[in-house]
Length: 71
Image (cartoon, rainbow, N blue to C red; front, side, top):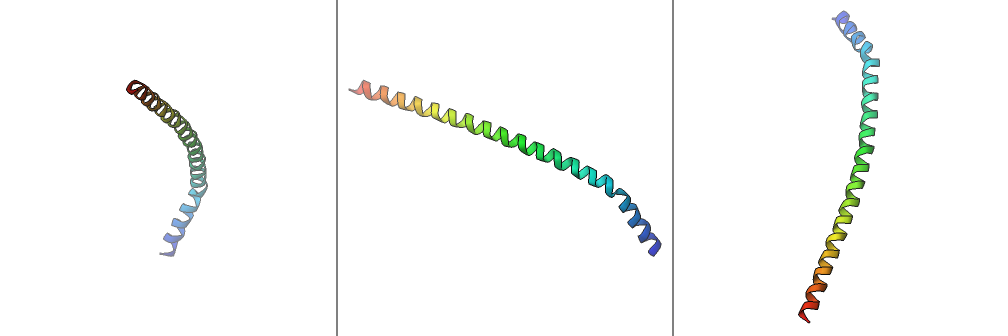
């Protein structure tokens, strides 16, 4: 039984450098994707703000036009 456990442990230990490299690469990829996602969210927020301002301007212009017509 001890021989089997020892072989199993040695087998797993030999994979540690491979696993470490795999996780380090994936972590770098995740960080890169997080930065890209953050920049896209910021871009979307700017576009949304611009759109909302445009909508407010249209409503204000429509209200001004309606109030001038009612006079």
